[in-house]
Amino acid sequence: MRQKKQIKVTNYQTLMYPDLGYPYELRKSRGKSISLTIYPNNFIILRIPNRMPKNQVIEFLQERKSWVQAKFQDNKKHNPKRAEFKDGDLIPIFGKLRQVIHTKNQETKLSNTILYLNIKGIKSESGFRTRALSFLKNELLQIASPILTDALKQIGTKNYDLKIRKMRTLWGSCSSNHQISLNLGLIFCPMEVIKYVIVHEATHTKVFNHSTAFWHLLSALDKNFMKSEKWLKADRSKTLCYLL
Ligand SMILES: [Zn+2]
Image (cartoon, rainbow, N blue to C red; front, side):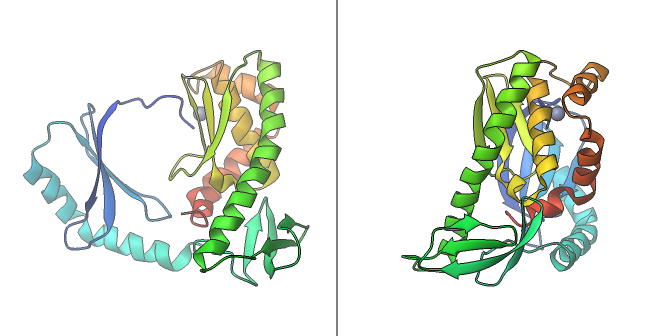
């Protein structure tokens, strides 16, 4: 949900962790410190300063090897699995646990407790997921568009494009070229959290940082934002495990 990265990342690369074989993303930046982050979905980022010698980086990775391995296994064991949308699966969708029911003679639709998934023409199991995500992406767009339009109107900014895409760590982003992106993973979040993320990004069209002015404007638009913020902090990228 940051407007801009504080440190400009100059380079991205996906590499394998020595001896463990877990993929990690190497990000070189103009910053001065080295850091390693493992998200609950086992997405690993190593951030290093631009000119750090290779042997120093390898040494750093070696030192943290057993910590990384333990964390990785722990995440795998305790965090939600990727949603596959198989017949009978229980998945939280827009904040309610719904059962996936495969059908061939009715349209894909959401009821209070069920996601009816039309599986006509689907040839492999991965097709269930593709079809369900594309349906839910459109549902999210239908939900998000009016909320965003309304928020922008209240803030007094306009001409922002709304895009929904898969993101590995952020719930939403607001870019200087007038685009607001929402994470597709929001389909697994409660409605008030979806609203909060949209209003949060909309607020960034006016205030680009997280200053007092930002939170002040945000709270005028979403009085219950603290509750959603807490929800995201607690369940955060655990929820993204369903997506990634
Ligand atoms: Zn933000």
